[in-house]
Length: 329
Ligand SMILES: [Zn+2]
Ligand SMILES: [Zn+2]
Image (tube, rainbow, N blue to C red):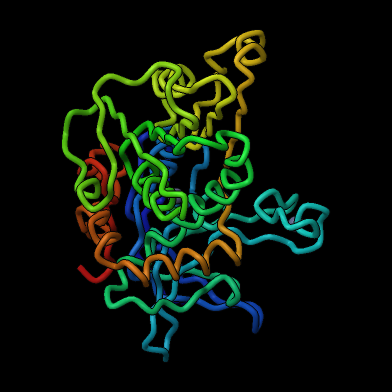
């Protein structure tokens, strides 16, 4: 009989159960069966579990693991691209036509063991390996930041750039951090409908505002994914400004602005979806390595594997932090 492992399996809408499953086995020399250590609980997992369509899926894509016989820790890049299609060839591997995403459409890290191509693992240099769970979400934020940098010169040439972040969760925190590093030192504003404190805020020069601005900022970055957040983001930008849609909208969502208004106000709409590539993952690791103190503020509750069914269906992380599953507790 094959060796067994514990895993959290999606069984239907808001239904996740801990099961004993056969441990995966590598079928080629390019693959490795890694021992899962820590996994960040992403809102995407909550959305997948609410939908409940992918029955039998083991989710979990923000993974830190170890390779048997090696004392180091590795972050997983869960986006396995083919390298052959036109998107891969032109540097858009996140849009790969044969994309295989561990934890999304292939078995992920909510288990004791994980099968992955060896090249998807990146060695970590952090004093606290839990921070490696932030590599995947930070890679996606870096992808957005790189896209934003290409439009910044269109937004203002004379005045200090004013950037407005909508939503103070992990996405808002990561994008605020990245924008705060720009050499032009933009003015950063944050709005969130929750009144709670965000533990990451005091580490950055960012002003929290209760009343969202009206046609006053150059760039809004929408990180909440909510329709209210999108309305706030569009209302806040000046003529000739830009709105970045970063928070994942629900399937039925449409834009809260007419084509006419978009045109009259000459707005740029930029979207950014996923984006963990070899380059962004390496950049993310550098950022965390350089400022472990800041990124530590984003780690919230630590829960055992057995705690996943409850944590993923109730979804109540400490505001502005990631809940992390630890297989050793
Ligand atoms: Zn995620
Ligand atoms: Zn491809």
